[in-house]
Length: 110
Image 1 (cartoon, one colour):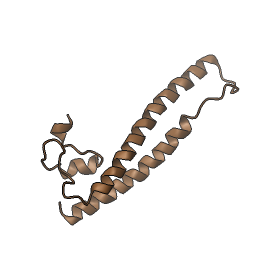
Image 2 (cartoon, rainbow, N blue to C red):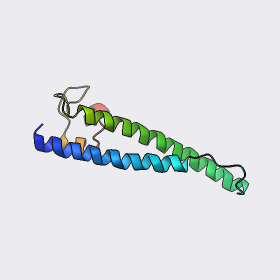
Image 3 (cartoon, rainbow, N blue to C red):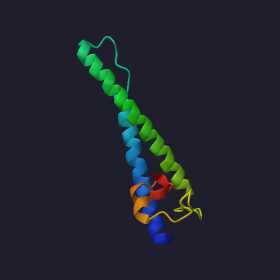
């Protein structure tokens, strides 16, 4: 992979890390416990609990993505960066730019 592509990928990863960090902060705010003294109705409380559950799942996914992005950023200068871990073929640049945290080509990720 040439220097121009690596620079573009590195910028994309850094940008994704920043966006994902913001998402994690937002999800943590949403998933804070609902205080029982808050005067909301039973149905509203059930909605809030359901929404909290959905937000917690999104938080876990965002934290996982952030972890993978940080790892990939440390690996970008390695010789095997951009090579599928499974089949050892080059991962297309478009896939790397779309999902920089992915370490597998489309065929192996399926």
